[in-house]
Image 1 (cartoon, rainbow over the protein chains, first blue to last red):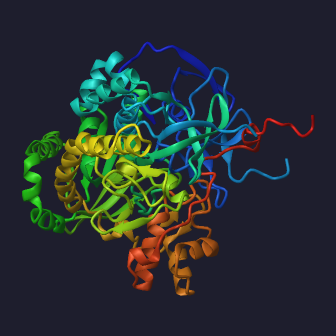
Image 2: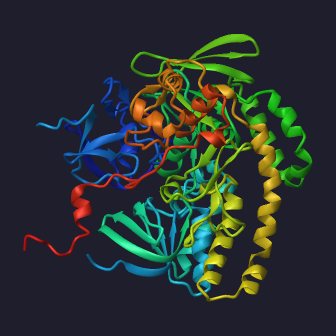
Image 3: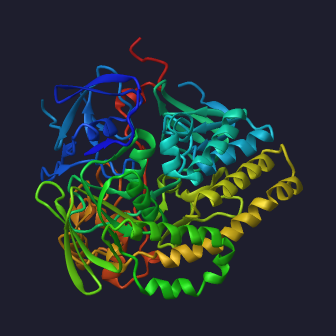
Length: 98
Length: 470
């Protein structure tokens, strides 16, 4: 959904989104890294299952919630990528029973 | 539990207000901790400015002189004795000066003899049909991605909105060669008349006014369709935004786009202050709540001050002045300077802040949001994005006799989702006021309760040092 404005030679780290490996600039937020890789849907809502993606990018709207390293409800726009990070879309309400 | 580490002053937020407050207080020998949730100082307005100025001259040029200027404030903070702590969320704050923090180092409670809240601003919610679709973001979000991540929108961009930041971002995205397919200016023609009445006071800022004119001219000259008097905005698309339809000067239009950027001005980011029940008052010019404070930022609570946009919207320049005033007042209250010294040192900032108020009033009048932005006329529009509560749901609750937002929350779940009402609070209150024929000031707003940032049980348990199982 977004593309680099100018090419950079920033070092990259490898993250995984839905099992797919992505090499992204180090120091990037998870949300920016995913948006730059064509991801527009970050989660589905617990009420109607509607698809949602980042809206405010400053930690206010909580629309960019994803699952990071098996922990749900992480604000993708507030968290920086780390090598080996496993990211998944957050599906609706997290079930109480596994 | 350990006694919280104690400091003279804790400043929350490392934007222009917070940095100025921290530096001013540290200069007068206070032990100052500056907490910020971002990895680098600058707040939203100067976000990532150090790295951009040092490493990316093309982006620095694109973002402009007003942005690059922020590096000076960041430098001043870096060179001070301020204990700056990045990547630190504040999830709780107490009237007694206790602050709960969460950082990569873990969870902690620290305590300040005085607290200055400088949490900045957020963009006003723009509840129009389709605003929850993926592909719809705020104009500020696009600018944040440019500042922090060197990213521009990839695909056709329609920009819809009003206000200084809106036209600035439009101009920046055009200069960055984003595929902007339309700039839709929602400013109401009526606003020009209201703004005209207060323009004399703003004329001393003729440079800023001319700058605004220049941005508008640049957008016009770009050849991108630039519509004015835009209303009845609807974003269409099934699972994601496919475009936007609207009415401009009596003619209906439809424009296809992959990304729609909305903006209708900014409002104070007041969650922290409100979680403390600081006294607030409704401001009819800015159509938002202000934290009730004196010229030094002192709130109704003994230890708590507020500085910059999180108190009331003044912009980055005013935030710097207000930050300094709050920092000086902290030094006076904690006894490192006397009142006469505070007044003498604060005089210029006080005057500058008052001067800027006349420019702000002009901007508030000129870019006052349309009624349909404040009270969505259509029942089907989602108001609370988290719980998918519509304007119609709120109206129905009002018809059942619900009078206030907190009761509406219990009836509808509006404001109960993860954003804790940050995004729907103003709209829910505005709909209730409208339905009941009440003043916004009388309807009030959601109560805010901690934790105001997500924190896991595990992270909370970090606070306990005496393990009962051992």
